[in-house]
Image (cartoon, rainbow, N blue to C red; front, side, top):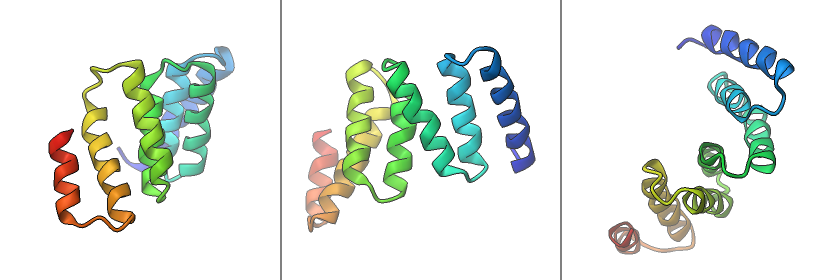
Amino acid sequence: MAVGGWATAADFFEKALALSPDSAAMRHGLGVALFRMGDTRGAEEQFERIVRTTPSYRESYYNLAMIKAGSGRMEEALSRVSTALEHDPGYMAAPVDTAWVRCTVRDRRGGGDEGIVLLIVRQ
């Protein structure tokens, strides 16, 4: 979707939130639209609000993890992915990304390629 399409989506979600400010789904949609438009900070704010008000909304933990990982905050990213798995151990996307985040954290601490491979295999 082009940026203009995401802007239209963001406008829709903002209007929906005006009618139903506690809707985690509408807030999540706004966060995704903001992220796609390049407003990472705005997206992060929306996802953080969801995890405070609707802690069981696992998708927001996952998206927060990806935002935090993308900005180099790997420990925070790992924490968010782990929380998503606590809420839903069967969440399919999270185990793969948990391995990736753990590998990146390990690598940033000086672990070599062998350490990365071992972490992925254990996951």
